[in-house]
Each structure stands twice: as structure tokens, then as C-alpha cells.
Length: 624
Image (cartoon, rainbow, N blue to C red; front, side, top):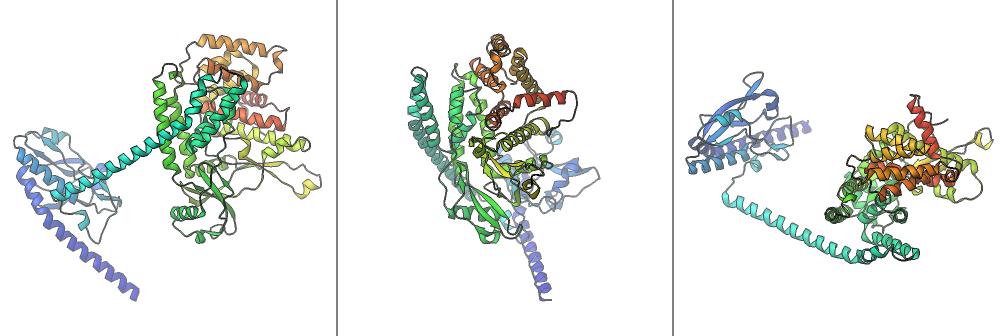
């Protein structure tokens, strides 16, 4: 009973405050209505009801200088008002404009449809002509809209006295604050640019001489470039990793060296991880986790990972908590701005314009955002889990909602050993290695041919192997197959239908060593092809593929042919779109570690077989 009395008292207080607010509203607006009436002409028009539903609860002025509820006159239309001011009276024009500005601040939205709209617009059209044809035709102009939470108890914050001095003071304060922030950002950007200039000076100064001296000198220069990128910060580390996937733009030996870039970074303190988790989920760390290891199990350039045990939603479940490093987003945006400026400057240099670095940087920006936003990685994980829901030997970490945030991601902790350990073993486990090669290949081909959603970072460090030992396997009734877990799915690729068809024809041409078809498909791998001499490119590629078809050239592996093709693409300045090149390089990376597991397995021949099955409209069998 006492609780009901308390609720009644609060409702009575809210009603009293609303009446007081309405009285204050009426006392302030009378002067504004008078100014509008004396200096302007109010007219009335009709608008479709479907457009006026969002503004169903607000007041408008009438010809008689009084406020009236805005109600629907017919089923299909609703009235609104326009204000027109004569240009012959400049004083009246100014007074009417100021009066209407005050009224725009006063009308507060109270309807239930859009609770986030704090101030709704008055339908107004100010026409600086004595004729009223323009207000009649161009009827609706939104006066003022602002996102603010609705306040029922007191509407006075929404209807302040907008004195000229206070308004000017507020505008001046905002301007000064914005000016100070802009100056500080400019100084920070300048200091960062100077630091990077000194850091990159040795590598850039020696770049013209990298090919002039011995091979050992070039190797030292490549190592210097890699170490420079590692010291430059996370944005440049990610750029180097991305550049390693573009052999169509950069020399092959540089791509190989950049592929060695390590994302390892110093770990931030436990206090920051705790604060970030509590801020992201709005709860204390002890309320979410039963246990939480303060020391991270791994730390990269973007985030670090802690091992923990959940408390309530999934009691006792071991999870991996990925926490983004402090200020990494701001640092990457600042460095990316500098990279973008360098790319735009390179487009003005005739010898570098064919690289289209400006477009490449935009593609790199998409890659970077997918790495920084951990909630996007969670979405990728969910999509991969759905695509492979019927596969027993392939899995992905599962994001645990609602513990997903752009700066914090909680996912299942996956046990297993890196596939690198099986690659390094020289003897033993031959059947296990063969199974790993087959499962990894068919998983990738399913992503490419069936799902059109490709894990674009399939290096050995992102692949775990679990051995499923059961009783039947131990008794040798059945041979246990390994289980593969794909990690770090922030970088993905999707292709349009035309790109997929063209890329599949390209792969078939490479597998059958058809040089002219491969050249034709390669020239179609970019919507903005700017190859200076397509005929010369086609002729050289045809000669190369003809040699590979001879007994002497038959010893070359199809993937080696693909490496040679990409080098020819770079020399002839043939453009390939970013996503397509990412898929091609992913195949090369996949083939690299699978050849170490099973040297007799030919990924290109397998791809050719599956593509032929697709051509004759047969369902693709990934387990044959």
C-alpha cells in the first residue's frame, strides 16, 4: 500500500511540474507570437498524413496569434504553417526571423513515436519576397531539430530565454573550444609527421640503391624496412601485413619480408583492461567473471587477450577476453591520415600514378576498421559458424553475447596446438598431416565457391589443431581425424558475382596452363584497368604458359606459375582489385603451408576439379 501511495505522489508531482512548465512556456512565447504576427504573414497548407505522423503532438501558431493543437483535418492530409516576410521591410524581416528562431527553440516534442527527438521542427518557410507563391509550392522547411531525451517533469530546460548576449557567449565559447582542439590536433599531427620522417629516412634514402648493389645489400635493406615498420606503430604494422598480400603492387621479395611482420606489442596494464571491460558492459568485473587472469596470454598491435571464467550467463565456461589497447583507435586514425596524404601526393607523380595508391589506401582503411572494431570480428565469427554448422572437423571461436563491444570481445577459449608444429615435424604423423592439408583446403574452397565469405588471413599462426582421440580410435576401429580451429577472422573478403565468375575462369586457365585465357581474365580483374600495353602483357604470358606446357616446364608447380604471373602483372602495371588479389594471395599462403604437410597434394588441381563439377551443375562434394 505504501508503495502505491509513493507512486501516486510521484505521478502527482510530475503533473504539477508539467502544469508549471506549461505556464512558463506560455508566458515566454506571447512576445514571440506578437512579433511574428506584426512582422510576417502566416499561411496554411496541407501535407500528406504519412509525412506528418512523426509530428503529431506539437503546437503551431495561427492567424489569431494563439497556440493551438496541430490536429489532422482529413484522413489524407494535415495542416501546417508557413511564414513569409516582405523584403521591402528589412527591420520587419529581421524581427520576424529572430522571433521564429525563438519559437523553433520552444516547441518540444511530446509524442510517443520518437522518444529521442527532444525538439521537433516547426514547419516553416521563410520567403524573402512579397509574393507567397514560393511558400505555397515549397511548403516544408524544417526549423530546428536536436537529439535530446524527453523530460516530463520540467520542460524549462527546453525553453530557455535566448537572450542575445548569452547566445553570443555560448557561440564564442564553442568556437574557442573547437579552435583550441583543432590547433592541438594540428600540433600533434605535425610532431608525429616529423617523428615518422626521421624514422623512415634511412630506409627511404637507401631505397633507390636497393637494386644497384649486391643481393646481400638488398636483403639488409628489406630487413631495415621491416624493422622500421615495426617501430612505427600498429597502423604501419598492419599496412605492412596488408602490403604483403599485394604482390601485384610490390616486389615478391619485399612481400615475403613483410609477411614476417609480427603484431606483437607491449601489453597494457591490468587496471586499464578492468576499466575498459567495466565501461563497455556497465558492470563490475567480479560480477561478470568468476576468475580473471591479470597477465594476458597474448598481446598484438590492436588488442591483448586474457583468460577468464564466466560467472552467470555461462557458469564455469572458460573464455578469451580480447581488450583493445588504449588510444589505439586515435593513433591509427592519425597515422592513417598521414598515409592518405602520402598516397594522394604519389598520385601526382607520373611514375607512381599507375599504382593507384589512393584507392589502395581506401581499401586498406576498410581492412583497418575491421581490425580495430572488435564487434565486427564477432559478426564475422557468427557468420562463419553458421556457414560451417554441418562440418564436424572445422570450427571457430564463438562470441558470447551480450559481452560484445567495439573495444572488448568475449569469446570461447579454444585449446589446441598451432599447425606450425605439424609442419616442422619431419617424420611421423604422415596420415595426420595429409588430413590437415585436405581439411584446410576444402574449408577454404567452400568459403570461395559456396559461401563467398573468405577468411583472408589464413597463415599458420591463426590455425589451431585439436586431436579427437576417442575409444574407437584408440582401438583402431576408426582413424581419428584432426579438428581445425580458425582464429582471428577480422580480415575477410567478399566478391561480386562477376568477379567470382571471372576469378574462377582465371583459376581454371592457370590449372590448365592456358596463357591467353589467363591473360584475358587477368585484364578483367579490375574495373579501372590502366595497363599501358595489354597486347605485350598477353603475348608474354602466352609464351610463359607455353613453356610450362613443355616437358622442361612441366616440373613447375601451378602455384609457382601463379607467382610468376603476379610478377608479370606488376612489371606490366596491370591493375587487380584489392579483394580479388587478397583471395589469390590467400590461396598462395594456404598452398605454402599445405605443401609442407602433404607435398603430393595439389590445391590448384583440386580447385580445377571442383570448378568443373560446378560447370556441369553438379553439387560440389567437399568430402570425396
